[in-house]
Figure 1 (spheres, rainbow, N blue to C red):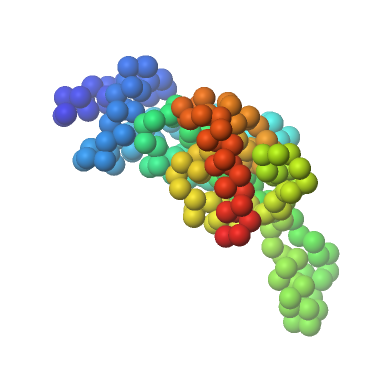
Figure 2 (cartoon, one colour):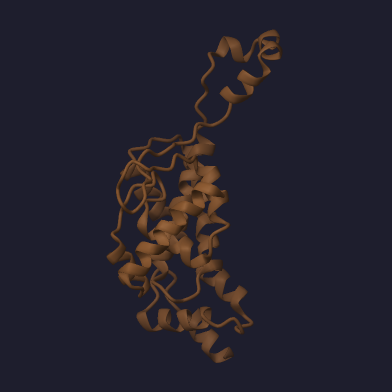
Length: 227
């Protein structure tokens, strides 16, 4: 095992070979693998370029302009997403497809945190008497604005859509099984909850039947409504 690990660690930091990924996947699928933390750290350190790449794609696709400091803060969130993905990765899927979902999720969260939109005029925000008189309004108005989707619908494409801000959704998703979380992120865009893959496509990615995915999606939607 030590020899195998040494082999894994002597690799180009920007590109793992297919054989190396197969070996990594096999190791990650074993609960008995005692050196998982070391492997996680190695993957994390070797994918700095990937985090910057995903952040730039995110900003370009969403047509977002940030200051230098804001972008640096956003990249920190992307690194959080990468680490969470690495820890949760069980070797049963493509690492980059799997990790990109978590990175995208954390990029959106970071975007809402680093770019707060203030609803109150500056004159109100600096007026102490006004703030004391209107505490609730001030508190609500000074929170970051979270995007709420009108497009996160059930599998039947009807008008039954969920309107959930990102923080609330993140909390709700933690109550789902890892399999259901993966189905969710394969089917819906992590930025605005748009439908991005059919049940058939999700099934192909996860080696599941289309009918099973369809049933799980319906159950997931109902669970998110009541949690």
